[in-house]
Image (tube, rainbow, N blue to C red; front, side, top):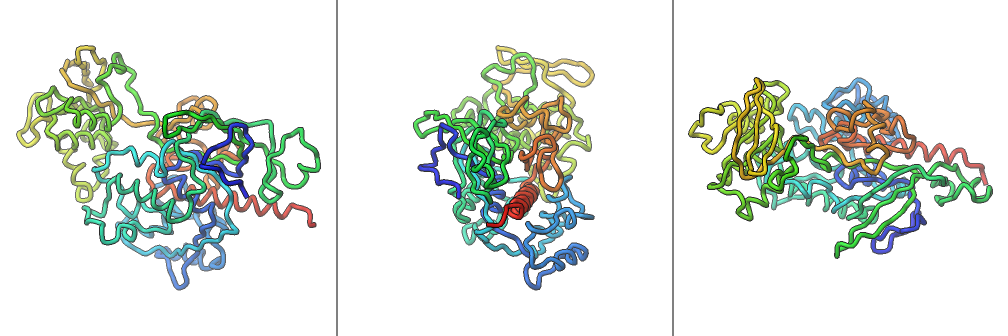
Length: 501
């Protein structure tokens, strides 16, 4: 087994090698740790799935966990809101007919099989839960509460009597973050998690590692033949980084890994406009900066307007926050309010009334008028920022090249984010669908095998979650299933290849 870390301190000398290193401790990394720790889903006795074809396939292999079955076969013919077939499969099993708002019980039951566990470490820059701890705590999630939960612990069961009745069964990011932390504790996963750890480099090393079946030890290529012959030797990854102590000190570490899983999500690097003056102090790229400005009184009902740039849900959250606090808002976005690609035109009005309100504000407001119902809000559809000036003036340009100068107290540029992959060569660009473009969770995801989630260009390097286009928690769980299934089957193959004693 992998040696226990004393006080969760990683070694500086590369003396530790793990079979699996998971980069990212959000819901993707947590769910993967759950499966790697030996939790296995089976078809419940007497349970049935509303899809008769899938039910027939499950019945034929009832004695096997889903992890040990042929995922490609089970996924065949299924349709869903993910382009990754295993994500659709697992979502279909956990939330039957979830897209139709139906509350069918999952036909799966979970069993802990400790002998199936594979040693691993999960690194994260903060506490388990990842970026959910940094999100604005009072807004409602886009997804329903049960779409946010992880296998084996229902949100409703965890909230119990203390859970308030939220509109349409949606929850707040603050509640989700606490739930994810509790999940790690409840399922006994803490030993696998190392918080406050930041990677600076992940690269192939010159060493090789014996598989877990053959002794799970680090062996250098210059070592003796007798050591290497005990198991299947495989190339190592070398991971470097630093841990942040409670006093802010940075302690470097170096560890080896036979497999690396990228589960970093997408909130690390806010996208920038790349215009003049964007680095001025009053221009921010996080909604939390806006909240801080409100608390400290830097913006208020009597201040100059706050400029919010963007037409996504984060920008909408900022508009709602400002409207609630009475802070005047100028809202600039490139699209037309009727553009079918605008997220608000894709959300059911009944389920998302607050976002529908923002869409109404965007639709009914014009540059020259100000309806009384939305006092303090002015929208600039089909506009973009050309520059920010030191005197807190911003120059906006419309689709027909007309320019407008506006006075503002601060600017919030909320146009999305890209993952932080600076620890990989070329920021991981060579791993994307379009190798010459930056990795984008929406436009240029990492290229993986659709059933194992292994990077096509890098053996033993895996990716899951938003990095492969699964931007909703309900679908990241499929990556955990695919990766675990792949690694379990490889371990069995290695065991079968070992000579009999």
